[in-house]
Image (cartoon, rainbow over all chains, first blue to last red; front, side, top):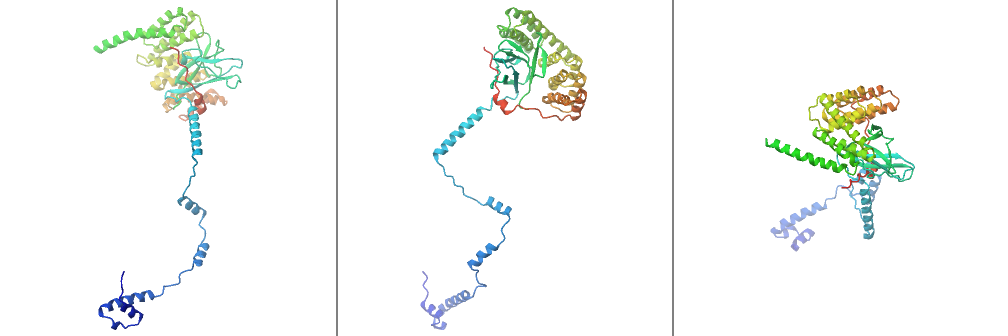
Length: 204
Length: 222
C-alpha cells in the first residue's frame, strides 16, 4: 500500500501553500497537480445514450437475403443431440439388418472375364424348364429356369465366362426346344438348330 | 538339346493323360459304343494340334440329345473336318502355323454360321489377331440377318480401322440391325452406320436387378 504524505493532501486541497512543504515533496505535488488537471479536461462530446444507440441499430438498413444466408452458414452453431440408448441400439440393429439384406441382394461378384446371360422362354404348360449347352457340358438339370409368377414365362440369369455358347431348352426333362427369342441360330448337325448366346464381359 | 528332350517327354506323358481325362468326361454321357470312335477322332485332333473341346462338346451334345451312335460319330467327324478346314483357311489367309486353337474354333464356328470362306479370309487378312474373333462374330451376325457378306465384312473392317474396340464390334452389327428395324434397306443401314463410325449407340449393360438374381451354373458332379 502506498502511503501519501498528509501534507501533500493539504497542499492539493489548498489548505497549505506549496512553499510550506519541504522541497522533496514539491516535485510530487507538482506531478499530482498536473495529473489532476488532465483529468479535469472535459471529453470532446457527450456519449450517445443507450436509446440513441438502439434506435441507430433499428434504422440501419437490413442486410440482403444473400448476406443473411451467408452469415447463417458461417456463424458457428451448437448442435445438441439427446440420445436415448434404447432407441439408438434399436436403430443400429435395424440399420445393420438393412445393410446385410442389401449386400446379400447384390448377387455374385463378377470377375473381369465374366458376364451375364439371360434365358427367357414361354412354356405355359411346362412343369420344368432347364437350359443346357456348351457352358454346362450339355448336362441337363444343372441350370433350371423359374416361373415365379406362374404366367408361363420361364427365366434364368446366369453368370458365365465371356464367350460364345450354343444351347437349347429342355422342357419337362424330355422336349428339346431352341430359344425362339435368340437372334442367332446354328445347325446342330443332328437335324435341329441350337441357339447361340454371346456373353460379353460385364466390366467393360 | 536337353530342353527339346524334356518337351518331347512331357508331350508323350501329357497325351495319354489328356486321353484319360477325355474318356472320363465321355463315359456315362454318351453311349459306350460311341466312345472308341469318338475318342480316336479326338486323338487325331490332338495330334494335329487342333482344339479338342469342340469335338468333346459335340459328342456330349449328341449324348444329351439321345442321338444314335452313328450320328454322334458322324457329327464329331464333321466337326473335326470343320476344324481342319479352318486351319487351312487361316494359313491361306497368311497366318503362320501353328494356328491358335481359339482362332480355329472361331473360324470353324463362323463357317457353321454361314460365312463364306473368302469373306473370312478377307477379315483374317485385314485384321490383327485380337479383334478377329469379335469381328467374325459381328460379320456373322450381319450375314445371318441377310446383309451382303462382302459389305458386312467391309463395315466391320472399317470399324476396326477407325478405332472401334473389339468388345464393341457387336454393337456395330446391332446398330445396322436397328437401322433395318427403322425401315431402311440393308445397304442404307450399312451406309449410315459407316458414316457414324466410330460413334455407336451405348451398349446395354446388365441392370442391378439382373445381376442380383444371377447365379452360377452348378458344378458338375465329380
